[in-house]
Length: 107
Image 1: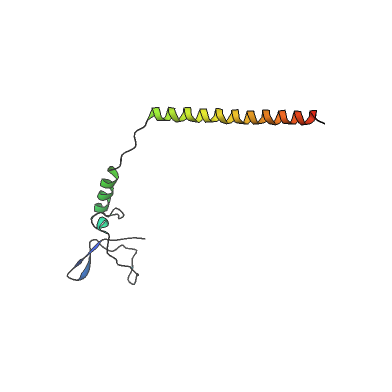
Image 2: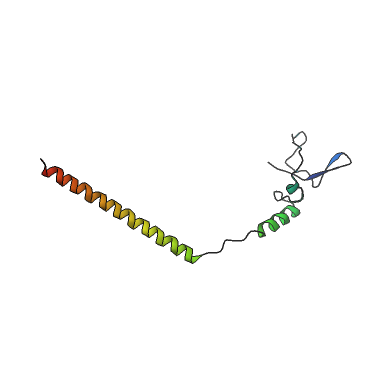
């Protein structure tokens, strides 16, 4: 869906930019009031203003800092959980083996 910016002046809708070329006469449109946040910041268009607004919006974001210690800590925790899981499986196999040997001995 394409959008263009417009304002109401003297009770009439006035476009802030030309209509897109792919909107011929008879094209159906919907008009609605923009949110207060959207009124001054259009980051969806191809106009120079929209591109500048998008660049300004995009530069507000910063990458999260890498935390090598956290990565090492997570790796240690995962390794501990793997060892615990292996120990639980081994204990279960041992118990099942002992039970099966006991069952064989009772016959």
